[in-house]
Length: 622
Ligand code: F6R
Image 1 (cartoon, helix red, strand yellow):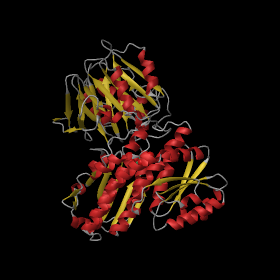
Image 2 (cartoon, helix red, strand yellow; image 1 turned 90 degrees about the vertical axis):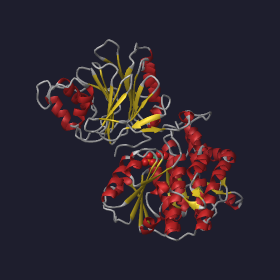
Image 3 (cartoon, protein in one colour; image 1 turned 180 degrees about the vertical axis):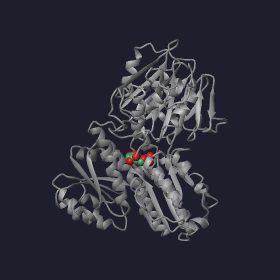
Image 4 (cartoon, rainbow, N blue to C red; image 1 turned 60 degrees about the vertical axis):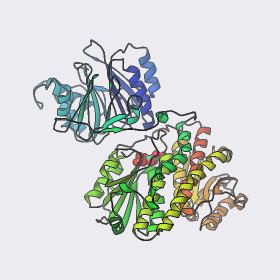
């Protein structure tokens, strides 16, 4: 969703801010802006507009913006429609304080009314603007002396005083014309990272905006603040006392934010999946034993687990469906998968022997975080599966597995999903071993087959492109499509349908194939695309029977099938092959052609596969 970047140094910051905002584009946004201190001026230059960062870049290219300290923002509308007026940065009445903000200020309506009553003029519909006015009051003292203490004339103190009035979530960066070279930042429930480059200090809401400048970053904790100047950065705790920061080194490849020769990030990330499997498994089998030290639970504690909830959203939820299948299959522990947005508002049965597994690529999804907090209050142990080091999900869970997907830029999750499924498979194996349901020998054999999927994905990537493109061509003009499969393949179909609809805007639904004749089959008429995962499994014949019912009604069938299955060609119009794997590992292989199919259809329909409309990479609001 929204993104923050800020820099103060000795060089003009305009282009640094624009390139930082470009790094944040993947998060999804509808407008963007910057605020820069102009040398020798008592005001700030603020430029904000609706649309892409490229538009902002052209607008500022011809302006004389020479300041060496500034902040920038990409906004994903929550309070107030996408418009130039609502785009950040937002300024105080005098125009000398500018704020960029991620998060939601829940009591903004009441604060706004109060501030208007004290003579402040608002120029936007956003919740953020109240912060600019609150900071202004704390800096200058309230105009009529009500509701605020004396003027601080100190940006750090003013920011710290202003945020005390705020209920909700915020990560903010603030500049003030009267304090040249100073950026103040603070956070609550919304990430802020700070880093020192060779000659400048940087702030951002996401490490990716800083990696060109530094690999050593400080992730602020809730309530902490930092004051950045060209010379350095000072950190403060919630009480305002100076603190020593905890520095995290980021070892991502420099090309992480580049397409590396691929036409789009999505294709690049799909091609990274063999590496993701290998990296996620690296170091997990030590001396013939499964090694997941980060679990935070002993085998004895795992043995006591009598119920598992997997909570997640979207693609991560689909990874959860696969986990349910594996945990119940191997460990025989009843497992429920719930959308985090539902889990948090009902009263799930949780005891101290309940294990809650929270799955989140970004580690900052608001609903998943709220569900984690709720589960912990009720006494459950929470285990996080996330891709982002130091993310809220990682920090708030009792144990965590990092998926080693590395930064994912395309909005649609691909490599993160594979990393999640592999990590959840490891968790299922650990639970099974702790419960004594699988022997060490069985675990070793399954682990070795899990590792083989890296090569098997590579085979799909190397050989199935033409078949996938043909299938995409055949369905690209359809108004709707159905994905059907049985058993673990139905979970793959849910993910395939989500991928297709989110990036190609072609309506798609997934059903357990046995459900077809209970309703969805009414949709089938000649040419209607039915995409199926019909790989070899105990329910293969049943799936084929369901496909025959679709075929009889004229459906155009696109099948993902096991290499060597020639029979499937009798009913399928298009066949995409995947290597033969044990049924439980099909999600790791058979999802890959569905990702590629969605991408091909999207491209044929002229869609932007990396940044689909209306979507954000990190959903940090409810
Ligand atoms: C779909 C997609 C989303 C996310 C969902 C949860 O491709 O990416 O459905 O999976 O928003 O996000 P995380 O995993 O970051 O909690």
